[in-house]
Length: 257
Ligand SMILES: [Zn+2]
Image (cartoon, rainbow, N blue to C red; front, side):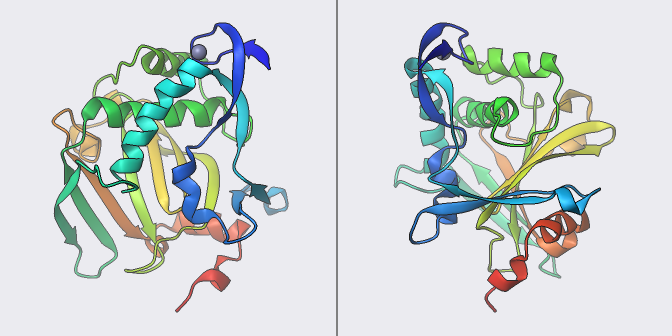
């Protein structure tokens, strides 16, 4: 299909691209046939909540070949690091802590390539916003353009531009709350809009205006020295998130005791 590449804005033959890199939801696939769940939650009107079963993953005509290759470079990097798909893993956990009640965990990583991992995060955010497959809340066009330019020019920006808090959400100490994608939703922190998307147990919370945050709120963002703190939390400690999932999905049946 000929169309305008969303990244470089050139008229080209477009690829039928994955919106989310495939490794991010490999664990979501049922054994056979391959499928996974996407959940859309409307907290104000639960009748509007939807549950979709996707075959094979969500694709759209977004990118021309060279631009897709560029993004796949960052995807491969993320696959090797936080998703540990290959053996070339360079980022490691330096220290892991848990609170005495075992409701929160922190994993202090070091050894990330700031540029590669930050560009992965920025490209993920950008794709989720421009995709028509998700019911992503409206985001200011200036922000979308800023993201497009950063990804296109391979500029990872400052650590506190579009800072991302990455959390592993668990049902209990051992079990990750995976198996589904929760459609993107907006929350606020100190008047700062945050776009959240939960993908197979990994919650990506992108602060859309994170420069303005007080410095202690930036502790979890990826730093230029390659360190990042990833937070683990038990789902039931986050009432908003818990309600959101519960409203859409009878997930209790899937919890194996
Ligand atoms: Zn392009």
